[in-house]
Length: 137
Image (cartoon, one colour):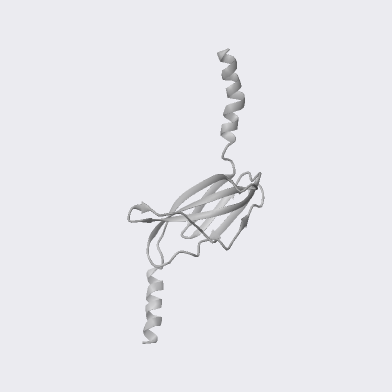
């Protein structure tokens, strides 16, 4: 009897657990550019991207990135990208992004997160801006 139960678990339960979480293939970002790839989008209607920032060693609340943009699902094995334009670009920041796949019924089917750092303006850009300001003094 134990062998039969083990066999049934091995054949039916384990493969279904391995298949869970197969919407996202990869998510990454460079600075404020967010990219992700999907493996299977069955039942996914759209994606929501959220961001939070590390402030004084504590992660802040999640905020939706680009709420003006709806990222509709394209189908299996698709690539997506989004530019986070809501970051004030003057200082180094540590960010965490969360991408949520939302089903037709409005429930989150799967989530993937990653962390990145953003260094803001380069010293060359700061020098250029400083010289432009100096011309108008």
